[in-house]
Length: 210
Image 1 (spheres, one colour):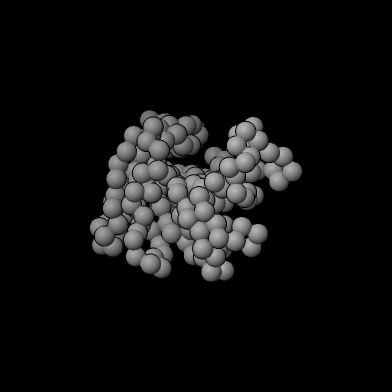
Image 2: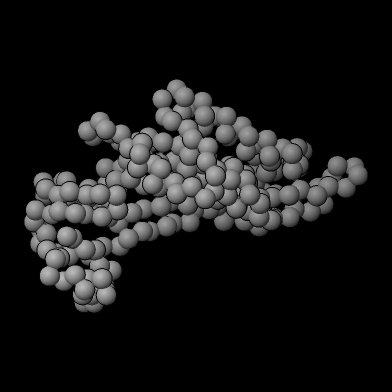
C-alpha cells in the first residue's frame, strides 16, 4: 500500500491505523486551480472600451450579439473536434468530469494534446446590455448565469492529465485544473522509475525514495 500525505511530519488517522501495511508514502500537492481572466473585461467601462477598440463604436453592442458570440465559439470548437476526431460529450453539471475523462484517456504511447471535450452548463459571469428606445447603450450589467462552458481535457508532457474550462460568454472566464499526482507520475516516467497508478493515486513504487 502507498499513501499520499499532505503534510510530511503528520500522519492521518487512516495511516496510523494501517501503519503495518503501508510500505511507503509520498508527499505532493493534490490539486491546483488557476483562475484566468482579462482584467479589462471585468468592469463595465473596460468592457465597453474593449468593444469600441474591436468594432470602432458601440454599434452592435447588444445582449443578443454577445450570446451569438458564444454560439459561434461553440460551433468552431465542435468543428475543430470533428476535424481532429476528438470526442465531444454533453453532460449534466453533477457529472464527475475528471472521472469520465479517465475512461477516454488515449492508449497511444506519447500522445499529447486535447483528447476529450466536455460541454456542460455552469455558473459564469456574463454581460447584459441595457439600451434606450433609440437603441443607444445606457448601461452594462454584470451578472452570473448558468451557461454552456467547455472542458478541454489535455495530456501534457509536464503535467499529465490537465483540464482547461472556458466560458465563451464575455468576459470569457477560464480555469486551469492541475493535478499534483499526475505531475509526480510524469516526472517518474522521465526518470525511468517503475510504478503502478490507479486513478488519482500510486499503488506501487519501485523506488519510493527516488
